[in-house]
Image (tube, rainbow, N blue to C red; front, side, top):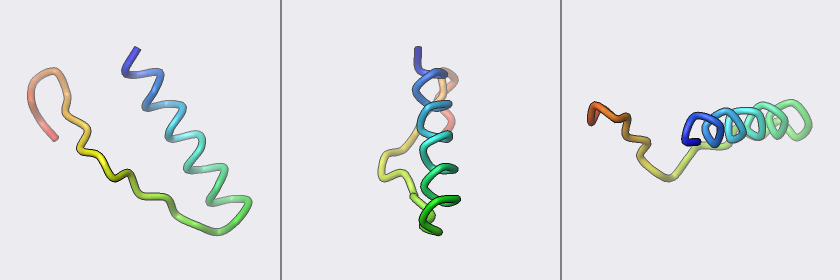
Length: 37
C-alpha cells in the first residue's frame, strides 16, 4: 500500500542519516487521499 511505501522510505532516510550523516529529501510531492500535499 501507499502507507507501506512511505514507511519504507522513512526507514531508508533514517538509516542513511545514521550511517552516513546525509539527509535525504524526497523529490516527489506526496499527496494524500484528500488532496493535501
